[in-house]
Length: 242
Image (cartoon, rainbow, N blue to C red; front, side, top):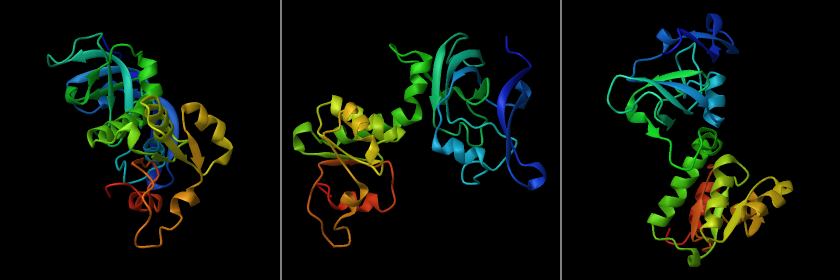
């Protein structure tokens, strides 16, 4: 049985002025509609959460609001037959933490279609250590594999390599046998990236070198770009099969 109230991070905009953040009490009745009530055990920290928590209108427009774009926990109530109370589940993406109150509260109510059962071999905590960043990195590598890029085809570039998506992508690719070139603006993190499996660490300037030309020499068999901006078209210009 669920409690009537719970603790949550609450983002507010008093009198349409500066956004404020506090740990406060919310009511279960305040949660949005959905057939699934989940007691949250863990959530990860993502850039989109920071945007929501500071009032970025591209992420969240209605306040008060609780951020958290992913969550792992236990089912408390389910009005459909999709899950049973006590099931361990996780959710990433959809509208969670954007306009739908998210994982930085002790409870969330969402549609069961957003949720998957916790994969075997993972704890709830481990699933959120990987979190949305890990899911994104895994999807990027899966897409590359689906496109037919094999470990022997050449170097794989990962930009933003010290970030959440980038670092996990480096580790997954290296584990799968790819030769990974990690691009970063943090030269001090060379040992960290090497420990993840990166074969070589380069600066952002090296990725951008020659991008002003109409054509660039092919350097990469594939790219996982976690930065965007000028690095994206530059890395694309020097990728095989572009």
